[in-house]
Amino acid sequence: MTLDKIIEEFTEEYTERAPHATKEEVKEVLKQAESILKSNKDKTPEEIINIMIEECVEDLNAILESTRTPGILSELKVDNIDICLLGGKSNKDSLTKEALFDIASITKLYTEVLAYKLINEKAFSLKSKIEELDPRFSKVGNNLTVEDILRFLVSFRTNGRIEDASTKEEAEERLFTIEVVQIGQKYDYNDMGLMIMKEVMEKVTNKSFQELLEEYILRPYGLKNTYLEVPEDKIHLVAGTPNQNGSVNDLKANVLGGYSGHAGIRATSQDLLDFTSHVMEDEKINQGLFIPNEYMNNRSNKMGNAYVNPKFFKKADGEIISGKNRSYFGSLAPIDSLASQGSTRVIARGEKARKTIITSTALSNIASLSDEETLELIAKKNEEILKKDPNAKVLNPSDLIKVRVWNQQEYKMHDPRRIMNEDQTLGSILYKYDNKIILKLLLLNKILKEQEHYDKDIYIERDITKERSH
Image (tube, rainbow, N blue to C red; front, side):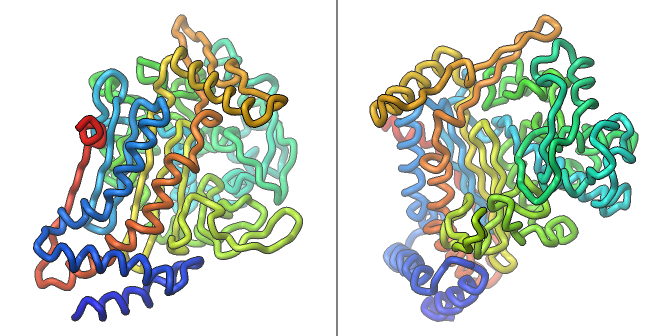
């Protein structure tokens, strides 16, 4: 088949499943790919891919130069093509592919997947009442269901902040006396629902959260570098937390023993890619996942922590607008797409272009900065804020740097959300993947598949820090 014919077929196939992409936009990107292919006929697929991703390498270098982020790793996998771009430091050492990132709220997606697997096994149902499943939550009332929690349709309150508890026992007591403020169609993103769900699943199955994770996700998905409790010999690989002992960057998780249903997982980029790929491929899990709920701020109506890529979006005032750029996807992304993000400035995504699964990560290590370095960043951000508006409210360091002591151990939490703009950094990399890189790689992959007996896996790893130093 000629290159022109392959591009023509590809354009038709792709635009069918991309809600915001026009044929003209797709053709423009493929024209760029065609130019690269024709002018580099003598080069290997690996060499061609390196040309296609050069812009992303430059962007990651720019992020490292413009921020104090110690390290960044971004990985993209398109079928059998795997590209890993990384640079900077983990803690004291250079960042490597083996780094275990504190993925913060991406943990919620694991908890939600666990819940749906138990639902499929009929351990409980979406309509099951929380109070009946676990009587310890007697104050939530008899209307709160599993579905309400998974879709983030509940506002909660506790008798005191869990992170301010003096002991694990006191923290659990506050969690079990949680009350419902409101249940309804209003989306309310919070940690509490999936903290409840973790306890409920343990109660119903008589298994620990660790055992459930192992049984339903880690072993079936082949994830060998995903941890709730990091082995001693791997603590030096933990990134994205200011806690040198490997504890996560979340005070509630730490006071409850190191993890809960909302936070606590540390994982490599490769394991995140594999987890996302399995979720995309599991029909029982993703059935209905990509249908957005118009009241949920562009997130899924099945898993409240997952962003989807809707064709249309309904605003609070009822106005219907395009869903374009309302989430963590570029304008050329396919409809079957989901993303999850964490406060440590980490994002994982999955996309499906017909039968091809595309996964990507953008993982920063900004929460690993010391208190002094974080304070410098806050001061710099406040200068920028006041320069724009002398009367504007500035960032309060005590809101972004917190410390607690439990059992004579100090735990820190750094909140980088206000000092690292995700859209201008990690999000920009992923938008570029969607709008430029993925289409080119899909076309290259299609051309390679046309070659008889071509089934080679391609892996490219580039240390952008070393490239920058030259």
